[in-house]
Image (cartoon, rainbow, N blue to C red; front, side, top):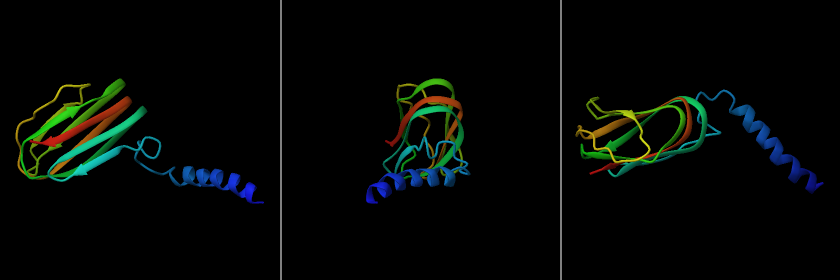
Length: 135
């Protein structure tokens, strides 16, 4: 009897999880759940691997005590588009553009406080990995 339960319960749990996640509007979840590390006044990092034809728009708030940052990208795009949009605490656009495969980006300085980090996927296939670091 215990053997049957041990084999049946995991399958039942997965089935319930699939049903429960069916109405999620985040195309990255649960199958492509991003790993986000949001450390106020230090760094913000985002990683998601094995993405396949994802279209989504994710927004995060990152607290910054200095208006100077560096973007460290490490992204592999097979197809589609990927855009990073960063606004400072005053709502001024600090960066808006693609996330390149490599090469640090130093955008103009912004106003310290809560910054908005938006990642937009348009039929994107590939791996995204970037970090924002205060200078």
